[in-house]
Image (cartoon, rainbow, N blue to C red):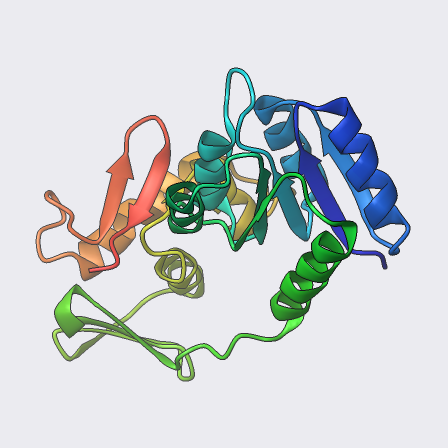
Length: 229
């Protein structure tokens, strides 16, 4: 199956150029001419790679990148006319995997896309033990065990899956809908209120003070964030 590339750029000329270039390499290419359109398309097609312009009216590339990083580790290449060292550094720090300046050479873009997708296909070696809150919370992925202050905590399979899902994405804001679809699935016979209920249950078991949570934080109007510290 062809890998999917989403290109977000307000230039129709640039969209057509990259579309032809990458389709000739066997990729399935979808294009969007604005940030909001690109985000909607991202949710629809779940691309393997995003190529993103920065200078777009309304929602610029910085904001699009931030919103993508809140929900996905998808590889992102900034492709932009902003070519100063400061912009390159800011682009990489904002969560992009690569940064290519316009005008670009076709063979260079091909090489960057090939290299990033190759890295993305390589299975990442995950640590068997995850530690948080200065080591007071420990998740043993091999044995599916959780310890708080060296004491084993009993979690249901769903509670464990929810905790591990959030812990692996520590530091990112996870929308309630995103959590629900990944843990319960779109065909579940329950609603998104289940996320709130199970977050409450987890807090009772892993937080020193569930009324003042330090690990599973609520981001009002956005979702939840698992603290990496």
